[in-house]
Image (cartoon, rainbow, N blue to C red; front, top):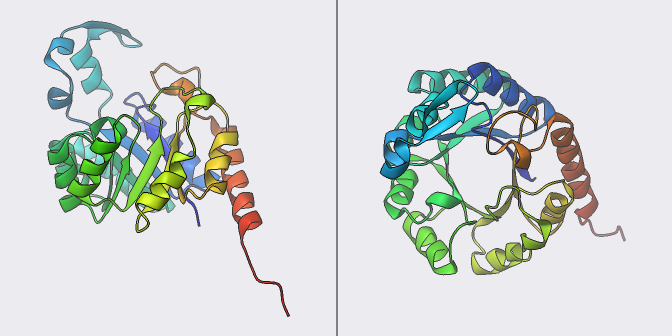
Length: 257
């Protein structure tokens, strides 16, 4: 069975209400997991960017103020985990720093290292120690850097991705799924997509991806850097339906004799 992650990411814009709506959407559509991103902005935002001014829906503010505004506190994380459990879907996060690993590990045993972070081997090792089940994405690194990450944290799932938001289909290189399958035969291989449309995600499943992650949104016209590379509610429902049909279509059962 293909495991499907609804990546809310930062599309909630710091709103608990919007995040819960997207968690509920993920559940109703048939996803197995709902995921956000968890950071300590004081650690993750480079010093030279912290004071830069940015126009936001809440007015002009420094970049570090904006990043704090859209970040959930530990109390909110606990509430989101409890809400998800109450409706029957598992909630977790991509962790961007060791502080976030410590917070998330209190409430979930699943964690992910996003493609931008797999060269942070200290973070990779901390996540491996903290979570029972660890996922990594490969989209921003060389083959050597991917190998170093796998050696450092022995992930359970390795996801192929291209971290362009949104990514042109000609740059997806889906055959890399087969490369990862052959190179890491004892790992589950997945696809984390940031492309327009659903066809290439369906292709990834047909090519053997056993995990799928797509960014979701309630409205692609909402403010935020990831909204345009996300799929809306109708798209998510179509995605789940299509994956289930593909799973049925590729099942092999010997003909009766």
